[in-house]
Length: 92
Image 1 (cartoon, helix red, strand yellow):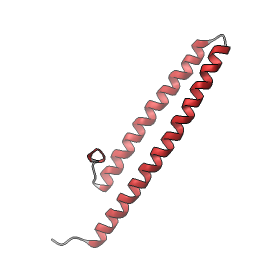
Image 2 (cartoon, rainbow, N blue to C red; image 1 turned 45 degrees about the horizontal axis):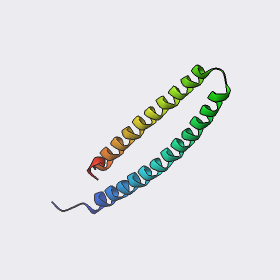
Image 3 (tube, rainbow, N blue to C red; image 1 turned 90 degrees about the vertical axis):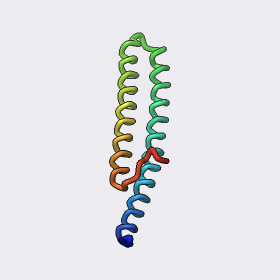
């Protein structure tokens, strides 16, 4: 059965869009991670100044939860996009 040039072209376009989106997601996640690191430093500085570390500790736990949730969302996006292009993301 000969290859379908249209299907091959569409698959190439999907793969390219997937890779571009993955790179953009990685960059955006890096920015969010950097911003959250800066926020943690600010919270740490406030923690030293404020007489209520329990409340700030709760904020830190919420930030940790957000990071975990973001990682989960990113993994789900990679799985969904990989399924669309028929390529296993963990294969390299």
